[in-house]
Image 1 (spheres, helix red, strand yellow):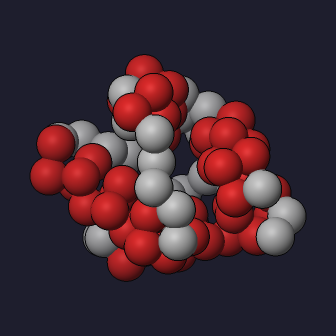
Image 2: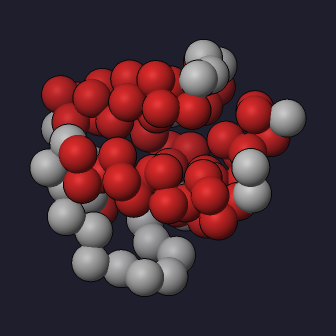
Image 3: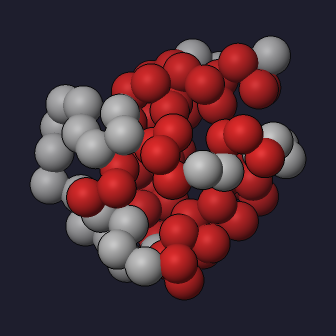
Length: 79
């Protein structure tokens, strides 16, 4: 799986949980995850879709500033 594959998966997850992302380049994920319920839905969906368990340090919303950087971090977990 490549970083582009991870990006596509995450954009699909956003769509599935009802979050409309209108950016094509890098963006701040926090701008789109407005409450804890949406955040938990996002995390659970990522874990299920990618077949991983996200470590605690990746669960901090502060680590979700850059979409591209978060995708690269998730790709490292898949390796």
